[in-house]
Image 1 (cartoon, helix red, strand yellow):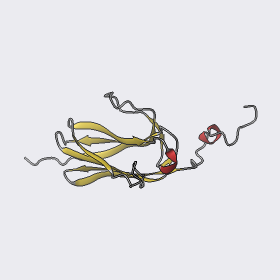
Image 2 (cartoon, rainbow, N blue to C red; image 1 turned 180 degrees about the horizontal axis):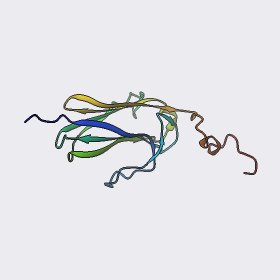
Image 3 (tube, rainbow, N blue to C red; image 1 turned 60 degrees about the vertical axis):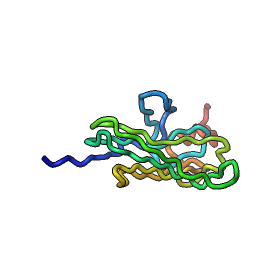
Image 4 (cartoon, rainbow, N blue to C red; image 1 turned 90 degrees about the horizontal axis):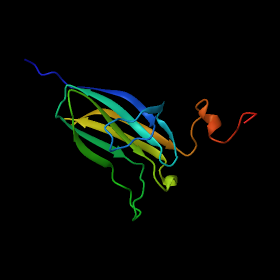
Length: 148
């Protein structure tokens, strides 16, 4: 009998509500986007669903935009290994911005590899000025509608 190939699907991506890494629950999506405002503690990334890959090795990697470490050298990418938990498994790969936020702008690339093959790849652009996105424009404090 032929073995089924694993399938990987990006379920959601963008800005998420606060996520507790110690919790088993995955974060909830707040806004689908690849353009991230440069704000302290903003949570962004993606959730994938992996099927038919129980116990397979999943390598994740987050490439930062040359953020300097304490010695002024660019930080290496953040990477690690995880084992797929079951045959219908959801996984969150994400990051957040920390102080000082001024040096966090630029492209943040997040990849997932399954058995040495990239199965998910998304780049988020962290920007000083958030893009105009409907109602969120008013929340930014630049302009206020009358009566507020």
